[in-house]
Length: 399
Image (cartoon, rainbow, N blue to C red; front, side, top):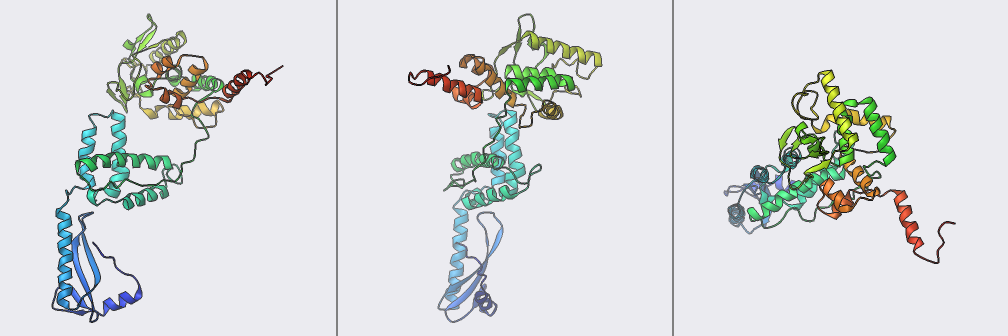
């Protein structure tokens, strides 16, 4: 509907020589060309936009009629659509999702919207949002410098995009949008990580020893994560009444997300009970004795792993000790707290534990997800190939 300003020199010279007519917004260029100017509301953003266009007409009156038609079309386009800005829809959308989502996911959605999506699209009307706008935003995000790297990673920008896509799919239905602006958005291929975010048995031993020697305050929590496969949100919410040494079990009945306690969700499952091994029981007991002797805050709170301020621990509490233990253990590759779940999955598989038992421990619902968390080592691959070769009579294996 809208014309664009021509920037070539000839058109600019013609427009500057236009002669005013008795019709508002109409200037005569020559006998067959008129310049029409009108201010209209952009249906995509709701802001005022000036349209400056050259039209062919036999008279100033005909040019004025075309100008009036242009204004009528703009009004009809605005009136024929349900008008809601992306920012307004986002408020109602996140409020409706808060009931179904766990706290961590809701916080992630909110951060993505407030920090990256709404600054770009908040003022747009949803029915005016186009794929070209989304693609331009993706491209710009990939060019921006992040806080800790030269450019935002493709995976990071794609995460923001998935949040916008999830919201837009609901908007297509609720606002009866004529088109989905999230279609046919392209991303560059993300480089595959060379590391697996998991440790070998030998590396895990060195890592735990480094944590025990240099960071004893975090040793029991790290050991619990390593040998149970628990998520940090479940492990950090343990209370001493959940630990039953007599029966040899730990009950998982709650979670903590950024210091807020809540019920265990169906999306991030956890076993109701996990075995309390003697070694783990000893580590927990010694950790409590250490806190009592040092008179640390939170020792009387009932939490198994209180923070230095006596409150519940949050995800970043292990950052410094984690980096220090990795350095001491001479592990130079990427490895996170969540990587202990992958490590536990690998160790359980190497130990020959049934897949059903592993899934019950880690809270994975499907075999596909369990496989996703597995990192098959080269020694396992070599043993598998050797076993296959032994099945073929014509091939000699060994001496």
